Image (cartoon, rainbow over all chains, first blue to last red; front, side):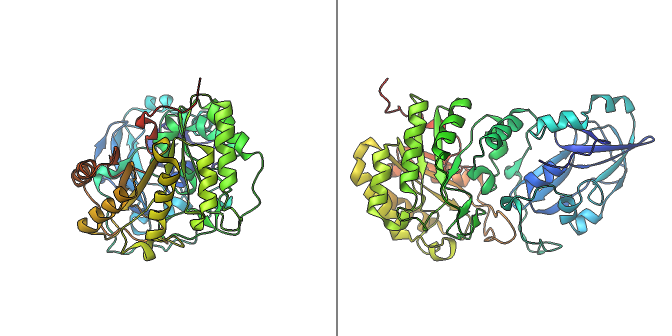
Length: 128
Length: 309
């Protein structure tokens, strides 16, 4: 079925968001990493880049496919997880923890309201 | 932590970093995971009816697109194949007994998904005396009984060259019979498992001999495994010589780090050129593009169903 932690928020494009104060950590869901299979490259954005919600900000490439990762929120990229570029497989093994991708300083926290909760995301992926 | 534990999703431990000389995927192969509920609905239905798909078992990069649109290619005979082709992600293992109700479940899924054109494939079942041919035939017949007017395409192994098995499939009267040559003559021993280049040509020749124009025959190749253009055109000529009507050409993609590496990513423009050349050679239908697979957009064929209304 896929692990869908209830404390996170989700975008239709299979990113999860963890909010902490004015900052959002973003990664791809367990469903996404499972669908993509063995991840072999991760391309991360530059720190300092300003992004708008829905903008492609990273690329996750597996053996068979490459997929754009879209930021669910607008703001400034303050941190990127270089562990994933050194060891892309961590996105497969720990998509919600060690496999996080970017951290964004939120410019518009109200955008969080448009994201899905775990239950809605589970319906989307047919896991509910 | 991945929550999946079924055999089809277990993979061998992945090395911590891929080799530095690994080719990057070109931009034209980038995909988007589906954002609508369509994917989830198809997935739920398939899980409810306990049906396997080659989409999932072979890790097809199109499967999000196809499942989102409500189509899928069922894989019958279980998820364990008796062969170990170096390009394929389907598990190689001792198969379980055939499920007698599988043909009915395929027919039911077809009905619920409202499919107009169904592709049925299967794992190789060299453990069975008929290679699973009768199971294929039953599936075709059950699907047709429940879905009048449907177009049925089957994609099979070589049934170890068995003429009886091919005749069984013929008696099922699918509209399209697909058996893939997969690659050029020179690369066949490296790429395929038990099947041979000549053996596959013979399968297509036999089916055409049995059916004539009543069944369209179809074959396909994966490109980018190191074949030359000359070798490709030679294979296309060999396919035409056995009366093959329909051709698919797609980019080989490595299903996991344990499968054959990609030698070359061929551009969409070159695929288009190959497709034009194939049409000149006389194939009545050709699909040639990087993401094309045997059953990709198969319903765009628009051939008449043989069902009498």
